[in-house]
Amino acid sequence: MNGVFLMKIKIFSSYKNWGIHALLIFVIFLVGINTWDSIRPMKINRPGDISILGKSSKTNFEMTRLESPDHPSSFLKREWSHFGPEVRSFIGKYVFEISEEEITLAEIGELLYENGYKNAAQEIAEKALLNDPTDIQALIVLGKIYLDSGKLEDFRYKYREFLFRNHDGNDYYKILANFLNEVGDFEQARSLFEFGIEISPQNIQVRYAYGDFLEVNDLYYEAINLYLMALSLNEKDAEAYFKLGEVYQKIGEKDKSDYFFNIASQFSQDLAEVIRELKTIFLESS
Image (cartoon, rainbow, N blue to C red; front, side, top):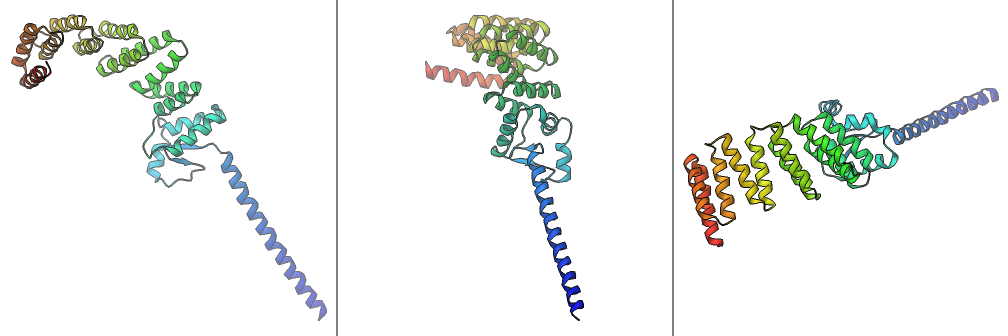
């Protein structure tokens, strides 16, 4: 009887030990997963959402989109090991703190540059421009980096390459010229427009953008020459007549202003209405 009792105690003890061992194994397994989570590189999906080991509330469709080769998260995931710990930490913090809007590589590059991570910012901005050759924001980020490093020639090469590919994108000229002017390089901004006219001599809009830029900088007679050259390309262009009337109004030459405004009104009823409003405003302010 005692033998049977002792056997039951041993069996119970072995089951008890097995349960403790199983519990210990489970705890070690959980600790292992948490440790792996802490060292695994973060995958950036959207601002405010960092996914680790695929833990995300996103649908399969969204995750597939985020894993596309051109998506910022895919690039950052591939290049994560190239960034130093400070940059990785900074990107992670940034993603946690900003709003729930889609983030672009150019925006990440801009933020990195503003916070002193120039090398990482340049790498990301160059990748953004490679993905999308029309990404003007990425080009501006590169411009800041190049100019900050005294590499004006490198930036000149980069923006000329950009404009050569996108020579019909007239807003690009304005954005780049304003950027160069703001950083104190007015002559470089002028040369940018000259380059645009050189590669696209029939593009009247580039001449208008150049003229607008000169007007903002009080170079009215140079602007007039550009508008006259635009007229030589298309003598029925209402916008050229309007711009000439507007600039002559600014410098107080009323007769010439009225002459060009009248022609613009004949070509465009919409501009005729704008001209009437301009004349009213001008009379009230004088």
